[in-house]
Length: 326
Length: 257
Image 1 (cartoon, rainbow over the protein chains, first blue to last red):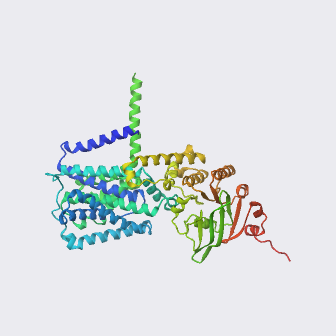
Image 2 (cartoon, helix red, strand yellow):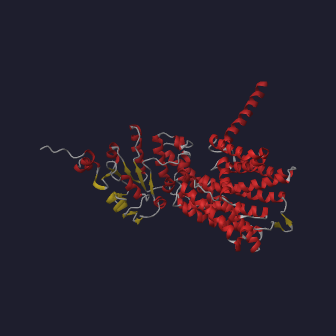
């Protein structure tokens, strides 16, 4: 694709996303889309660490929680406006990301997974028990809704545009990083740590950077969920939540940009579409995940080239048919 | 002539095993220096020490008059020590071109924010990365395979790509760990020609080899290791006639009474 075509496609997609909720979509679906957007940010974040640099992390929900609590407490206790709290909470999460990145320099894959699980439990327990700061088991209530002057983002539709903006920012930043020396360095570390180092990549720095970027995106998503739900509880940011984000990443296709988006949106909407299955839902969902991962180990994303070829063939066949008619 | 690299009293112990014992090595600028010895002599360990992959138990390495012992491997690369691996370590899932582009990392400077904003400086550097990567592929004769997945190359191709990738880091000293392993005679011939052309670019070459035709054909100096110790050093001719070297490779003759 040339530069022009890519620009045109991007403008088209953004316009479609901006107009879509105005076409009579109910608030329930818009809420789902908002949640999907927040998970896209989380999954794109985790993609830096797991997908690109190959460092396994079960801590993405912790950064989600740290960002959410930081943003809620900054606005409630320090009187900071949401617009300042959003980047600040992402930076707070980033600091914790750097901290979690440090053990990745010493321990390898499976052990690192255990370390990140430990980290996520510690974060959850601190949020749950540090009553003086986090309100403990009561959770944080009455988190202020963002406002722009007199305009309050108090409906699902209004919040949709805020989420969409941050999603577009996350996608943009991800694309730019993938196509740079930084993206190449992260990919190199995943493929061979030693070869990357010998080719001149400071692997220590880039591993920590990967965790920092994951955490930064996690923090942004956290701030968005805090001021959307206006209520937080530490137990929402548990190990299962991290596992869900990892699922989204692998089912969509890790290491790419489109994969995390497909995975996050798919796994947010699918449970709603499968609601008619009632009690069997979890079983069928579980079997589905297992089947999908065994048939398509590199994720749903691997269907895209096939789909593109199919469309192309349809198109050329049609042209041929038209030509033969003449 | 000036020594580009000097290793003094290098000892490496892995637990109770002494892999290298008090090795002194001096590599002269502009030469092709071969490192030979039977299996297990410590050749690869020495290359690992010189490229800072392994930190020696004792001893120090000086590169261009600057001590480099204890620095991380990527700093050694940045200072101009490039290397290949005996057990090929390519980025197998990436294309041939991407492999070489990754190696340009330490010759580019732009940071995270510049990458996101895509400044003019960033675009210029990326253009150079692409050009230089292509140049190195052309140099080793692989430009036509730029978009092949590295893991799908044949064995000889993978060895050449390792060399192209190491060259892309702009080394002044290139360490080659058994570059001819698994190559057929024609491939070895063109490899010899390639190594001479690398030296022609002003790059000093230190190579581990088992192929004596290659060593005797192009090396200026040969160092022989056995059981972690240096047992001989000299021109290829001198080494061929050295009694200790013969014993190391073939064993001592039986003395009949």
